[in-house]
Structures are given as C-alpha cells and as structure tokens.
Image (cartoon, rainbow, N blue to C red; front, side, top):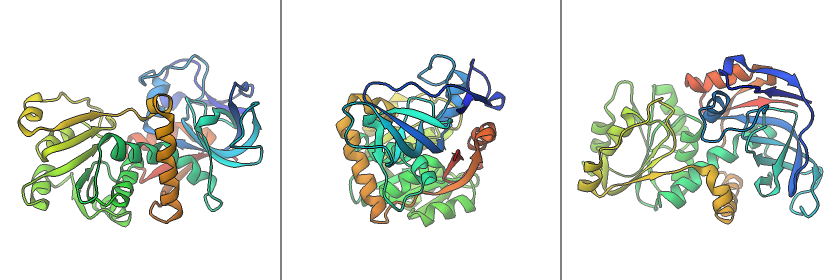
Length: 325
C-alpha cells in the first residue's frame, strides 16, 4: 500500500509517499480502507519529534480517518466489514490502510461523507469534551474562543452555542470572523487590529468571560487572563502561536481563576466511557444540524507537506483533509 512514511524525525517538507506493507492486525483491532485523513497541527509536531508521543520508525503521521471497515479482530461486534466509519489513531492515517483500536472506531451517519468523517473526531472530540467535561461550561455563561476559524476553534464555537453559551470569537481578519459568525459566534474580535482584553471587557460590561478556550497561547493567553471573570476557567488546548506561555500565578490567586490543562488523547485510555458519551452527543448534535463541519481544503496523499504547511501558516479555515480514495 501507499503511505507517507517517516523514517527519521524531519521537517514536514521532506515527507514523501512510499510503498509499504499493510499494517498488521492487532487484538481488538479494526482494519479500515482509508478514504480520507484529517490534517492536524500535531501532524507537523510528530513528524519533527516535537509531539508528546514518539512512535517507533518507520511510521505514517495522521491521527484521524474516514473509511470503510475491511476486517475486524475476533470479538469485535460493534462494527463489521463494509461499515462506513470514522476512527482515531495513535498514528498511521496518511496511508491507504490503517488498523485502529475497536474502541476508537465509530459508524458514521448515512449523510456524512468520508472527508467530513476524517475531519470530525479530534476537533469535535477536543472541543466538546474540553468544554463540557474539563471546563464545565454552563448554559448562560460567556465563552471566549481563540483561533475561532481554525480546525478546533470553529468546533468550539459550535459546541459552545449548542451548550447554550454566548460565544465571543477571536480570529485574524474579517473574513475569518465572518466564518465564525456563520457557525454561531455572537461577537467577533479581530486580534490584528483590536485589543482582546479591552474588547472583551466592553462586550461583557467589564465583567469578563466565564470560560476561555485557547489553542493559540503566547500573548493571547496573557490577554485572556486579564479578561477572565472571577471564578472563570481558562482551558489550554495547544500552542499554535508557537510560544508556550509562562503563567503569572498572582492573577490566579487574586481572581480565583482555574487554568485547566487538556490533552484529549489521554482520555481515550483514561476514561473511554466518557469519550464515548462525548462522541454520542456530538453525533446527535450533527444529526440535529447543530454541528456543520467545514472542510475547506483537500490535498492528495503526495501533497502532505503542503497540507501540514497550510495549517502552520493559518491559511486553512476550518479543517483540511487528505483525500486518499
């Protein structure tokens, strides 16, 4: 089969397609003919050895896929060959075939195409679980979403609205803010020309926001601390801005703010039942029309370097996927 192969840690622009053996079936595994793979910021990190998990060489990047089941291990009963599914992987999505843990494979609705399926699990899983479980967002609260036109940010806007929050979105440029508004954002802040802290205070009558969803980090994080309401929660999703911030603990003390770390992937093993419940609600919201996944760019398998670069330079609105079949 064809796969994008990493033989040593390298830069994403060095990635190439190679012919490799199909992955070996594992206990409680599901073999999937991959039709599309989601592209995530972490793909560029794992290729360079900068991700928190480092697979043995050689490996293919890619954490999420949409495709068709071709084989199941003994004892796997919730999916069967021929089922259309989405799946989350440890790695290996940029390939024509993948083997996933059965617990990480879900059937998809009849009206969901494979590109949407590949773009769904990580972004919506992260946003829903992060907001509902970790940040404890409640109806009527005010949610500030950074990077609101990106892959996870846009899903946080939608999940926040589905949970009954007022959503303030930040993004770079009016076009991106318009996309966030299409997906439910009540207010928008263009961080290129507006001060986030000042605008948030103006929009909330000086009170600040109850929850901050931050996949960006850096200066954005610092401004967020200063516009979070007392008893507010700031959930750290990632560092797409490239800077891992230092936390001024005095602000946490004075304002009674919680800083919440969140690595969604760990919960797949730590609390699989909570992950399943989270996905069930996301899929229900999708079928109710509350979630509208946005796939704005599709790349070929041999264009994997360009796909990863597009995420890094923030030229992708919503999600990008790699089309494989």
